[in-house]
Image 1 (tube, one colour):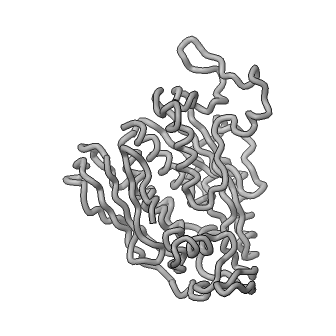
Image 2: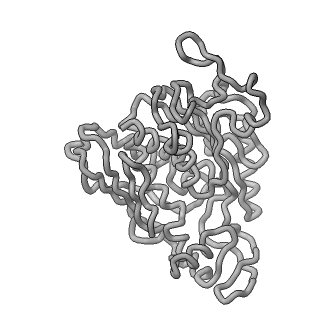
Image 3: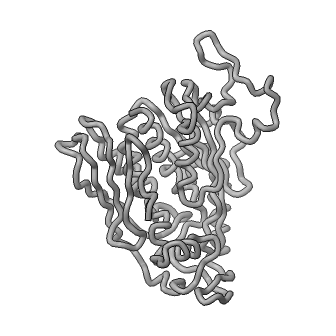
Length: 347
């Protein structure tokens, strides 16, 4: 299986399965002499871990990280940083009933057709459990580029949207609720809706908005390695992501050039920022902002039709512990992938 490595200069390779002994990663290309804040790394993991509230999966994993190499006396040595995260709360028996079936909108069918074999326990490598390793790497990447501020938050759940521009939001409120939405009134509606969806044994999708501030001019390349192209790839590599737009996004397609152009100020900044902080694939020093769409989680705790490996259609109800809405736990994953992209270009 290829495709387990992300990045060019700052590379991250992840390994492990959802229900294996452990997951982990190797970070190659991290500069030497970075004094790591391990508490900051731990906090990032706590934001992503399962079981943190009533609106996420109740799998209990403390996600303690064991660093194996690349760090000496609290500082990076410049050699590969290896780490593992033990899986301690697997319930593989929850998945025994799907070993001979393919769940709709999961990777089960294509995975087995491509590789001729699959680990059906929790989805194996296709499980979102893999993203814990990305969060570790992203937390370290953030410390390589400490002046750049990356803030992601839930901007919609189903048809419930924040109707304010990000400049009018108080980012300090993101941590105040389980949904990770900076608008407290909207957050309450989102949380109530997710709980209702969960009672129905159903799931719901949503969007995450990310704002990147204090970005220096010059990150990104003008042809294939455009900054927004790499950000798009990073976001679309996250489980359940169905869409990515930055700056004016699809709304920009409805505008005239005279409406869309970002006119300059004398200091090189722009009066508007419909470009989303990137022009010609290169950061221009303005805020970078984008939105990511997540589909509803595919596992439903209600009966639906599935395909068996001998070609029959049967009714089956999902089991196990699953998120009714993935977006609250995906916030730190989005931030981690942004940090990986920016650090790669920064180096």
